[in-house]
Length: 238
Ligand SMILES: Nc1ncnc2c1ncn2[C@@H]1O[C@H](COP(=O)(O)OP(=O)(O)OP(=O)(O)O)[C@@H](O)[C@H]1O
Ligand SMILES: [Mg+2]
Image (tube, rainbow, N blue to C red; front, side):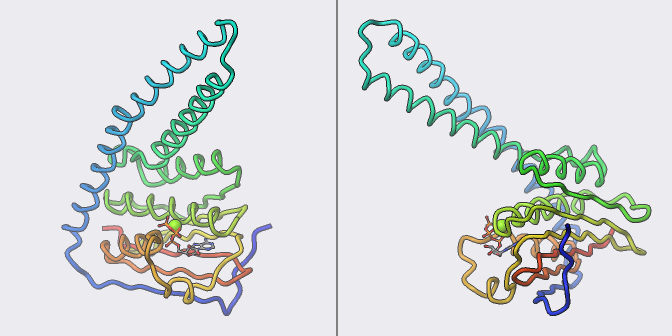
């Protein structure tokens, strides 16, 4: 069953001023295009090379098996190399699948978030409920990109750090504002203690906060050990 957040959970809040939103929107679009280009480069470069190396090793392995007597030690080395390369290829493919930008221009917000939810369910086996409250307005590209990346990070953190098993995502709109709430039933954490510590090597929560800040919205993360975690984002729709 889903664990409800109770009172007393620690929380951080962030409300931004109205900076140059147009410039930040352009920055987000450029960043996503760059991610797309990097993914293509990885696909066309290292992935093709690993695949070519694997094909060569499959041939050598087949020939060695056919040769009599087979030099066991060398055959084992070839098998281990094949296994390592296959793992590397799978890891790169998973990474590319998770980070490839999902046609942000063409698809609407609900459709890209639904795609992400389904992908997360398939990868982790965790059910994710996605609730849309009321009629959502069409939102500009930077808002779509940010909500997608924030949901991706929130779901990933819940599994990686909280060992969560269920996630609930609620999207709702009020006047000129869109709200996304992502809750998990994981083991939670002491927000102030963890986020005050050295941030070296931990970019996720900071990145979420920064994305919301660039859009002129509000960000909060609420959690406590044993009580799950709730990420809430309010962004302007225009
Ligand atoms: N949903 C969650 N459940 C439990 N702990 C969490 C959750 N989200 C964040 N945390 C805690 O907050 C820390 C900071 O999270 P953050 O996403 O910033 O960094 P990270 O996930 O450790 O690294 P990165 O996102 O850069 O790969 C995590 O290391 C974890 O201790
Ligand atoms: Mg993270």
